[in-house]
Image (cartoon, rainbow, N blue to C red; front, side, top):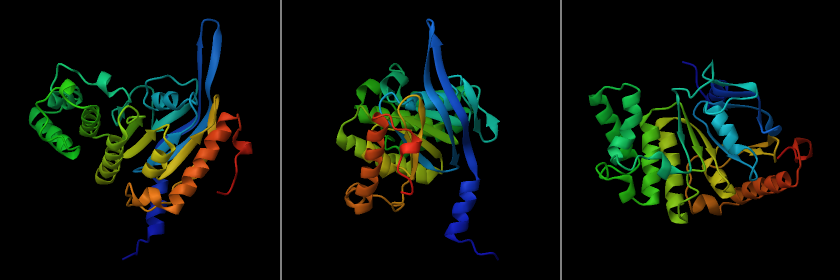
Length: 282
């Protein structure tokens, strides 16, 4: 029997690319003018990776995610999910937005909200019941299925949105600043929830955030974007232990080093620096 080392497992995972972004460009046109939002983005995401994306305000992070999710047409380039070019919202992808309140139907119960995408996919009722129950249990809302979203706190509503995405059983889960509107304590709880679900389900996660600490705590890798028109300023490997803790991890010297490096990159991006000016060999 051939022995499988951590290195060969890591190499196998690196070769199993689930998402490929190739020469992506996005220009908005209208009213006699054009705005170049994304100039040139090329990167790939191995299956099962938790990738964080950061950059200054207006750097095109949300535009990038909407292109990947098939919600915006690209101007040039190609986005490939599991070998198929994305031209519309793909079945193998789920999205959790910052505006979770707007994404939930207030007249439906929590269970009905989570079940809705499964109905649209034609999942049989008996299967839907089990999938929804498992998703609610996974996010700690097993006893809240009969409540309505307006009866829940902001953090609980965001858990409903995450449960709905998880129930969809996606290959890729896209999260666009999902915790920006909750308090610090709830944010920490939701960060740990995302990492727990990611490890449990093996789903690939693309997580956009303005919070540098959050990107270092959550991610295995961080894409730092330049200011508009957007390119990748640096692709940062987060070499922290796989098991993370809000107190111990954030207190570690390596966490501080990574946080400082990403902070410096974003400041450079705000000043208009491009990849040629970014520090190398970090």
